[in-house]
Length: 402
Ligand code: CS2
Ligand code: MG
Image 1 (cartoon, protein in one colour):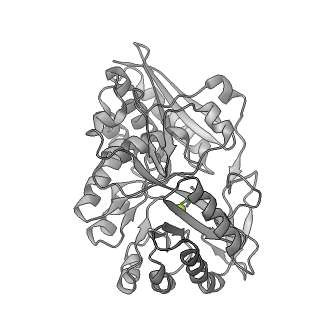
Image 2 (tube, rainbow, N blue to C red):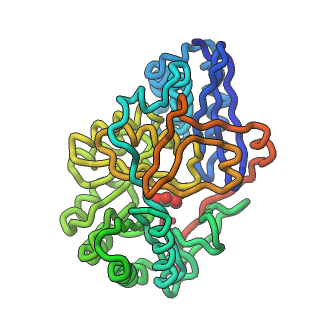
């Protein structure tokens, strides 16, 4: 089962995506997501200029060997661009293998460990009242878990709250949007948001919140303590994730569960946080953490330390990633929750898929492989448009994490 053709498809149906398509000599094709929001062409070039020339003629069944060949063979290991490119190859090879055997991918990952996977949606509002209304809409759609983000009085914009109605898309064409931030205003406000949400919806709904890398450890400890009465499902990215020791300080002060890892790209980013049980959910994802092969290793390590998965699943991860994540989620033992932001209609047209949402849960479907395809003719109608994630500054102009 030799790889006979490999191509990178860059398109922008609603937002930019990079997709790898591998095809074997006997005509079986597989897809991998290679999207790195704001730096898409770096991965497209890494694949086109350095990886694809190495794949022709390789046995598509040798998934682990190909992973090691691309990881160790590059000499320069790890990093978001490298690991996203390797992830795309890995996803495509798993897709091909499962298709060649006529089974949905999860059957090759140990089979289903559950009937379906719990997902959470993104509710956001300019005010607490708007956020309450948004959470209510998600509950009416059947969601059992909802992430709540609200505008902060005194700040023009904040993470997770879109301006226009519809799909929240933070990337802007040609230049980053600049936003202003005050941790003091945020810290004084967020407990009020969750006090109101618990008052409105009671104790049974899973409520999540994403701090989005913006606090110092002691500020995050304060927030975790202040939110304890509202028993969040998790508090995400409380601090920038480069310094694992920062989580040790937070852990000393609060029982609010912590989630981190959507920016992680290898097991080495995760291992100290896991070994020291400094977090409760790991957000590493199939597209940015080396694919299904590597993410399984990360999940197995996490299992030793009572850490569950909570894979990233924003709309800048394509339906190929979501499909792969759902197969992974269905099969691993220490599954926690899956982020689910429905893609734009144009995206779903380009990427027809088998996965389905029902009563707050999702299932990848039982189509052979990942259960997702790309309509190349439709993709060609949506050419790439350079776009950037926002840049965030403190009120005095100091650059801060977005
Ligand atoms: C966010 C992401 O979904 C999340 O948890 O952190 O939406 C993140 O802002 C984007 O994926 C960045 O591209
Ligand atoms: Mg996040």
